[in-house]
Image (tube, rainbow, N blue to C red; front, side, top):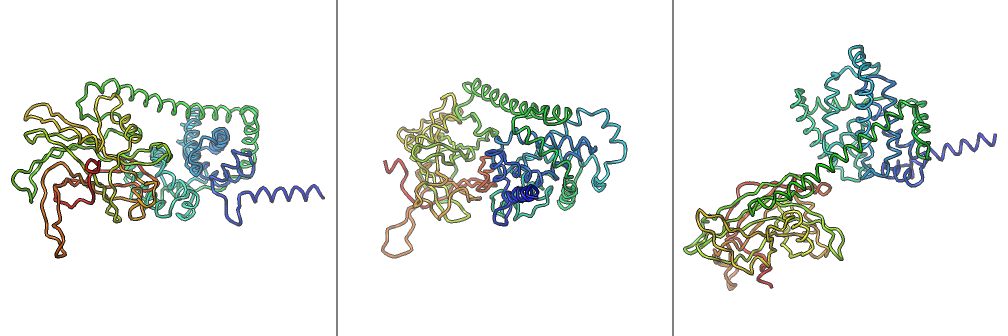
Length: 517
């Protein structure tokens, strides 16, 4: 009697570990508990939460119940062995989806002859007839190819049936972010399927995803068997001792596949870096060098000197070349790792004689009133040089050093004598008093960069109030950009130039760095 009572209490405690004051623990919290203490209840809670989705993926690919259950077991054994490598922890559902798809494909390859015969037969009982078998295959392939930032909300909201509010709580994202990424993910998925010959409207795609995610809960026997086997592996048992030989072979195959994928990415990165370094010396001075954060090389844009409406006689203007702004994270001594924006540029002098370029770069956000001035930050500039000029071929200057020597004259028809520079903005100043408008660059979607110093043009404008000095407006180059990311997705690829560039006359908000120094 006492033994039965004790077992009941233990069972209640195990069930309660997935709750916190009536609220379920997040995926990240459950995974942390399992990693730190090999908590069986935490693992079981994760399996109950994501197991139906994993089983549905395996069923769609394999169309055989026994094979699907084997692939599910392999997926969760891989989770035990690779749990500590999952980052961020809140993406565990998305990670399980990817591993389940790999496990199902591996099982498919192991059983190709038998599966070819079964695919021609009647589909697995309980599977949906509303989506064609081939479309189901393409749907998982296209979903697996999506960037994680878009696949995560689709897995949670479409395949697992969670609300946007629940997904936001699991991921720690604002509900608006989840909703926008879910919408973008659906659109990208629809575009991929259209290219593959299956054009679907967004409503039809949503129905197909919901149908694909539909799965009954895991059978108690399968849940118990998988949990026990996974916990034996976690306790130090070999995979072969804990699970069937077939599942053990499948698990090892998935682990090797994941390792090979990682090694391929590393080798490609090393190869590209080597090719870039080997060929950089033969490139033009303004050629794009190594891409930041593994992104494709950004295109260069050239803005020729143009006559503005208010130009007077004797006004000269430099040519200006630039790449779209980039985002970089740098460990700054005394401040830790911080996010910065920068723009690479070159100045070409075709004005008829050598002249100085004394620049001012103002980044203005249009979502909220905010003006960000470029800074001279040696630690950040060194990191940028390693990205933009790994061979040291270019002499990249900051906003002060570029004004110390005249820009050499470039003659018509001759090779241009361009001078290269970089302007840097702190995306979130460490000093709260410098966070203009109470926000930082992570919050913006529409920006303009105003470049002053490319011309000697200026006009005097009468002040609004009598008795004040005239207002000076300088000839300025306006570059406008659109950013498609958000606070949780700060990627240089999200920033795009909005044509055209404009030469305007504008009032300066401060002195240039060179003027102050």
